[in-house]
Amino acid sequence: MEIYKEFTFEAAHRLPNVEEGHKCARLHGHSYRVEVHVEGRIDPHTGWVMDFADITSAFAPVRSELDHHLLNDIEGLANPTSEHLSMWIWQRLENALPLAAIVVKETPTSGSIYRGR
Ligand SMILES: Nc1nc2c(c(=O)[nH]1)N=C([C@H](O)[C@H](O)COP(=O)(O)OP(=O)(O)OP(=O)(O)O)CN2
Ligand SMILES: [Zn+2]
Image (cartoon, rainbow, N blue to C red; front, side, top):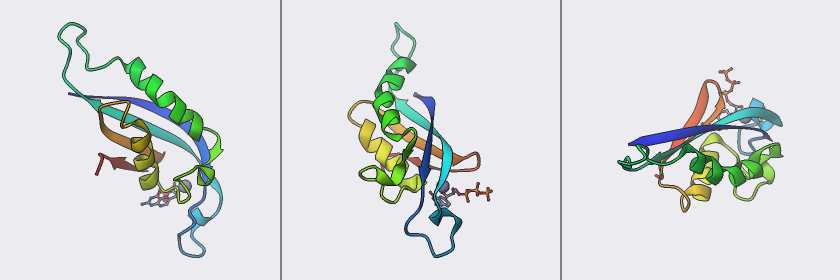
């Protein structure tokens, strides 16, 4: 069974490796949405895989690192594409949660999904 919790944060970024004149070379911001998906068996007593609150607790320090920051300034995010960000979040959480996927939505219509590979 897979469950997930969705979080939001606000951040600015620019993409340093896009071609000259690309809109994303300019500093701009997003209201990011992140889904943290975890997998496991349903506990027969509680009826859940994990308390959603435990996902919230694990993500809280990661959210603090990202929220209202310039992503390019964060170690490991010098080129903060959606792809790099979903991998970066996975690496931050993989020891704390039985991850199945990290979904990063940069805009309502674009994003990335990282499943550990
Ligand atoms: N594969 C990727 N492509 C793009 C990324 C990315 O991280 N990975 N990032 C961007 C920009 O950050 C941009 O802010 C988001 O892109 P886009 O979907 O083009 O944004 P728009 O809202 O302007 O798109 P619409 O055409 O209005 O839907 C670009 N590409
Ligand atoms: Zn962007």
